[in-house]
Length: 406
Image (cartoon, rainbow, N blue to C red):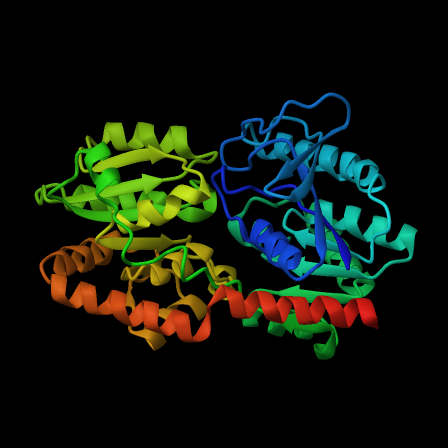
């Protein structure tokens, strides 16, 4: 099979961000298939250009994976208005770029952002090929819940576009069981939706990996390190972490390390300076290939989102990586991820937006290393049994073959 993916936010292992589609491409390659990727020429976390491009797109090979880097207007982190402008610019450039790829069997579109999925549908419709829609987050509902989308006309158009894509897709792939329930409630036939969680590579995040080089680099050799790894955006509620860190200032052994980048980073760093948080380090973005060492440097890991009902439907991918690395997770997200942590006995749940409870839980765990270690052991054992990415990639391959053969 030859599959074409349009994904503005695709990243390689040499960039910060989630590399699932690169791993899918390598897996399909090992099975005799090819995944060609149309991506933007900017990294979605840092906003930095990934390749020098002349014309609408530039082609590169990344460890045998063919990637076509299409133009995107470089304004992802300026404002929400300019972010939409960037999305639209890629929507058009990605269509032109996708038409340069010949002899495709299936078009794979992914959302968010939702506009690139429209590009994938248009290419599939024009070429009379099946269109697989991968839904990673529920848009526009997440934007409405966060208050990012307020204009009733824009919201109505977004929901119309969502319904349009669900109707036109040959099949829909979701990474959360709650997304499937949501779509069935919207009238999408249940047999049209397949749930396959991403999971993680249990070998990549081997618990034997030594994270001491990261600790030495940050001067945290003898500290209790609480790690957050991921985007620093509006959805991530890093302010609650800062307030918890302020409560824990008297306990100088506990340090918070934030690996990642995003639109909110300058404001958050200014806020940490204002609060005089010497126990918080903004460590910057790291490529995915460095993340096993980064997670190995932690004693305890954090996953957090705003207190929004829609966020109870989502699986943050970082939690899978924490679990594979045999690290306990303090989870400040309700819903299906809370159920995952509680079923695995792999961490502790904190009510979203409750910095007092967050500080208390972290302080208590810092005094009980045996409990933290057992939580980590539980987490990895559960993940290896239920969420090994090799199993999930095989399930994805079966779905792709089924669609193409049909």
